[in-house]
Image (cartoon, rainbow, N blue to C red; front, side, top):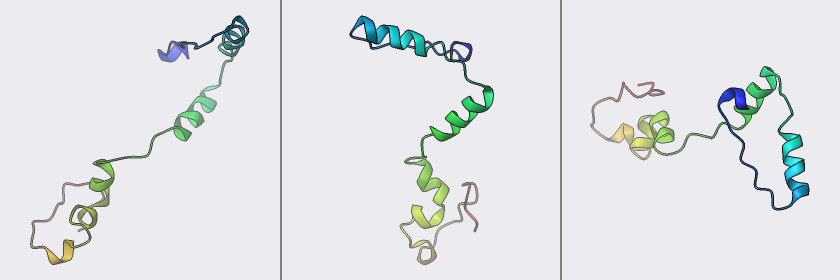
Length: 80
C-alpha cells in the first residue's frame, strides 16, 4: 500500500495487536488483486449523481412526460 501513497495507521491497544498489524502490513498483493478489491469497494453513487444518472424521470419525480420543460440532453443517461 505504501507504493500507492497509503500509510497505514494501526489502532492497536496491546503489544500483541501491534505485532499482528505489523505482520499483516507485510502482505504484498498482486495488481490484479488490488484492482479486484478496488472494484469491490467502490461506493455506490449517491445524491445528486443517482438523480442525474436517472435522467428526467427522477428529476421530475416520474412526471417528465406531463411537464413542458426543455430537454436535459447534457445529462448522462438521458435518452430523450
